[in-house]
Image (tube, rainbow, N blue to C red; front, side):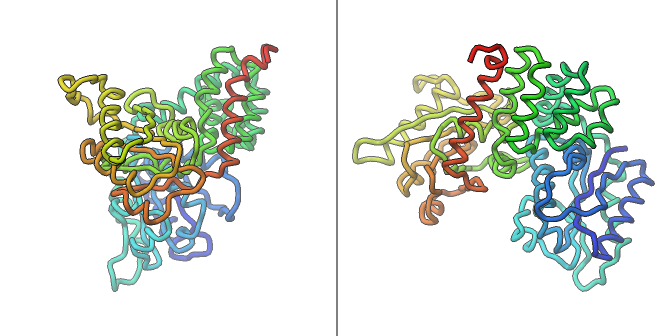
Length: 422
């Protein structure tokens, strides 16, 4: 048995509601628990805490795609978190269902391209849509669904660690309730607070998508009830949560795949900002991901050659401690790790820069290169010069980057402020 989240925008759509009802009924008959919100969510509404909890802990998911779903910001964010979990290695089954005669091209155009490699449940072309046959296609995928192994992928580990830190405040239920109120999750939290460890884990799930200003308020409430070392660990774990979750997801390779000459373009100035994007993407994983930062500004005429030689030397030295040619050999566990190289030349990349990155990827195809581009993203000519570039969106503003830097400083100083040292 397992918990199955159903993402939909079915209200007012007779076929979608019929498919949804039959899937719910069939899942219960197979002893699974469907997790579905029937009340409908208006565009612009805040994240509902119960949905965030479901997304963070479900064992599988069904995504019903009608036109309303493709137009829904909520469905897009739900899919992003599901695919974020999959990209981090969670054994999460996701079954997309095409309704309204939609095609996979329409799915791509709606910004849900990550679903396209997955087998869709759909009605054959020229056949009248039938709710029962569509539901049967979905339920066939759940016949032997095992409960997912929790706690092993980076997101589960990170959320479990947050819950452990928060558990220090369990002796003060009023404090936990006030923190839930700061996160706009008090009503749903109270339903979980009596469960052993359930309340703290529920709160931890809210930090996955909490706006940074709410996160800060919740920390201010919690901090006096926590030990100094716990506060430092908690603030460090939450430092990068200001980064948009969709941009963070884009910084990861596709689920189950290895990066192939992947270049990330981030319109930021600071290397620390780039590092926080990676920390957010990997949920602060301490194992399986490595990040190094280099900078090199060519001074001679061979600008491409200077760059590639400096970058290759840096890859060998920084990732593999190889200072000379004789030491340059790749370790046996290379495929078990994801390597990020942040390159910052303190100026926007041009076509020559892109050529050098392409040569670097020719030598190290498994390397993910993150390029800081300054305030403005590169123009189409430069972007197209990279073989496999991903622009991290939504775009970052200079004001947002400055605000994030100040917020990071406040978080670092929080234990000292509580102690009256600053």
